[in-house]
Length: 265
Image (cartoon, rainbow, N blue to C red; front, side, top):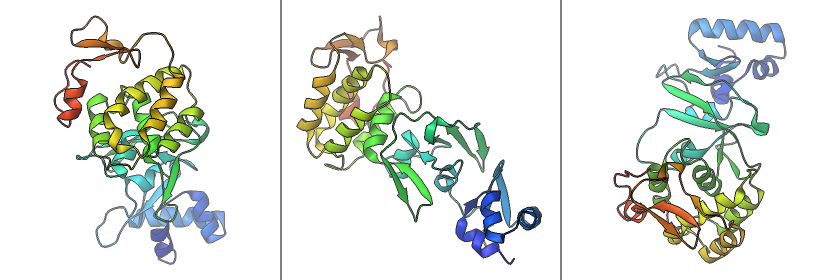
C-alpha cells in the first residue's frame, strides 16, 4: 500500500509514470502486478491503468480522465466534448478522442465505455481542466468539429440540440473565425457554408454574430452544394441562395422545436 495513495491521486497512469514514482523499472513492474492482483488498480488497455477506490470498488478516474491519458496530449472532442461541457441531456456510451499528429489508437472498451479515435483538424482550441487531468476541446472548436463531421459522429439533430443548449453569447466569434482560418481540411469553403447556415439560426449564442457571418460569406465557394449528399433527389429540400446550399426544408422546424424528429437526413 506504500504507493496506493499516490496512484489514487494520479487516477490514470502508465508504466512509465510508475517507474518515475518508484525510481526503478523492476520495482514498478512488481508493483503493477501486485496491485492488479489485489484489486488496487485495473488495466484499461495496454500500458494504461486506473486506480480503484477501496470504498466503492470503482475506478477513481472518470471517462474523461481516461480519454485524456490514452496517449500524451489526447483530448476529448466532438459530441463527447459537448457532453463534458454539459450540453447533452442523455448519457452516451461512446467517447471520441483526438490525438496530436493524428496518432491513431485502436478502439477499446473499458467499464462499459467505448473509446474511439477521431482525426483532429486543428492544433488549437484545447482546454485543460482539473489540474491538467482532462483535456477537452473548447465550445467553439467543438461546434466547428461537430458541424464538419456532422454525419460521422452525432448526426444533425443531436448537434442542433447541443448547440441549442449553449447559453446566450457563450460562443466567441473571434475564436470561431480564428479556428476556421486554421482548420486543416480540404474544401474549407464548404465548412464556411455549413457553419454560416447553421449558426445563423443560433445568432443569440454568439457574442458578435455579424463578425462571424461576414467572414463565412467572404470565404464560401460559388458552387452549389448539398448540405448532405443524402438530400439529392429527395423531397423536402430547398436551395438557400445566401449560403449556396441545398438544405433540408424542415431544418428551421427542428431548431425551433428543440430537436423534433428529423426525417430528411
